[in-house]
Image (cartoon, rainbow, N blue to C red; front, side):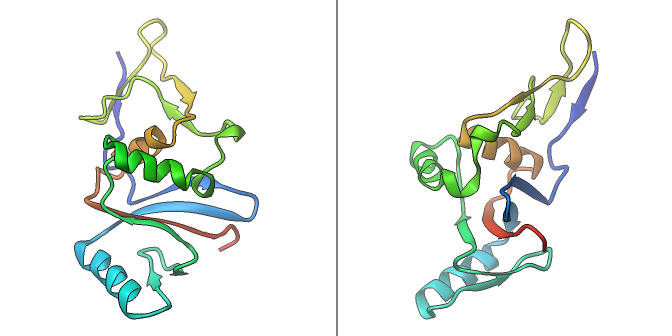
Length: 149
């Protein structure tokens, strides 16, 4: 039976592409989280340069810090900003089925030995899937940027 490992294959993931903007998630160090928190307290304008060169402002930052998608409080947080992160009605949020979220191993379908995908409609599962592909970073930032950057 075929298997692939998707754990830790990306540093940054695209969560959604709206018509005019894209939403990305990437990992943050503890120092980067502290910098963002300090700026939030000490200034009116948060600015942050992502690892990929985007200069983003507080208006473009959707979430940052630690997240545990298995925690009810964090699930509610994700659901509260769900419309800013994705539009599940577009049905283009495809993920492998048969994923082991501990190891990152995806196992092919037993009947035909092909990898199957399905469309996700749960924001917590969508984020967890992408956290797996980023090797479950300690801290993350989710931000939006214009689509043509």
